[in-house]
Length: 344
Image 1 (cartoon, rainbow, N blue to C red):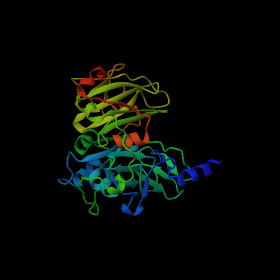
Image 2: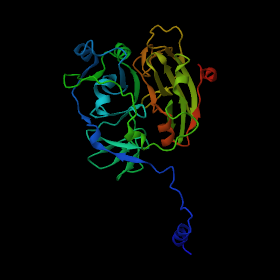
Image 3: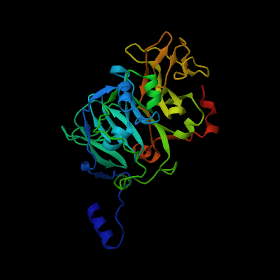
Image 4: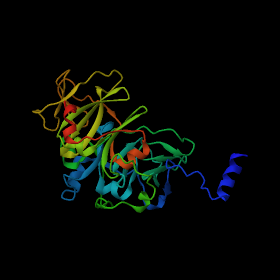
C-alpha cells in the first residue's frame, strides 16, 4: 500500500494525519500597514540638535551606525523609526521592530519596503527583485535569492545626548516640520503576535537578550543580566572565535567586537575596562598601546586614535524572536551573581 493510500485509510478510520511541523514559519504580509521612508534628506547631528531644540531629548533612543563616512550617524526612534519601521537609504536600510524589540542596519539600497511579519519578526521586500527578507537575520526567505543573507551594518543602540557629545560630527536625518515625534509603541501588534511560533521554554518570551552569531554557532545572553554589573568587558568564545562584549548601562548599549582592529592588516587589541578613564565616554583601554576606546569600538586617545575594532553582528532582541530564528542557540542566563567570572 502506498504512503498516500495508507494515510487516506487511517483518516477514514478516525486516526489523525501527521501534525504540521511547529517549525513551519507563520507569515502575515501586509505591506500597506507602514509606509517606508526612502532617501530622506541628511544633515549633521549638531545641526539637527539646534533645529529641534527642546523637542529632542538627551534620552531619546537612537539607532546609530558606527562606521563609514562621517564616523557614522544616529536616527532618533521617535522621529523616523516609530512611524516608518523601515528606512531605505544611501547610508543603509534601517529597520525597527518594536514587537520583537530590535533595531538593525542592512546594506544601502532604495529598494526595500516594509512587508509584514514572519515568525513574529518583521519582514521587508526588495521591490526591484522580489526577494523577501527577514529583518532580524537578513535571510532571504522568499524569492530568487532564497537562502542567502544580507551582511549587517555595524550599529548600536544609544541615547541622543551621549551620542551627540561623543560624536558631534556624525550624520542625522533632517527633522523638518513634516516629521513629528511619535511616542514609542506600548502594545504588541496582533498582526505580529499571530505569527509567533511556539515559545522556547528556556526563557520568558518577552525577555530581551543579546544575541550573537559566529558561523553556524549562536548564543544569547540575558540583556538585563549583562547590564546589571555596570560598564565592563565580557570575554567569550563563540564558534571557535574570541569575542569581546562591551557593556555600557548608562545608555543601555551592549556591543560585540573581535579583539582586533579593522582593516586589511588587523592587529590584536586586548580591551579591558579602565575604572578611572581620562575620558568617561571612553572607559576601555587596550593592553597593547594604552589607547582609550569608546562603546562604538573607536580609539579616541593614544597611539591608536582613530582606529576601530572589528564589529560583530550582535543584536538586542526579545527571546522569542531570537529563539525562533536560531532554535539551536545556546543561552546564558546572565544574572548578576553568575556574571562575576566574565569581568575583565
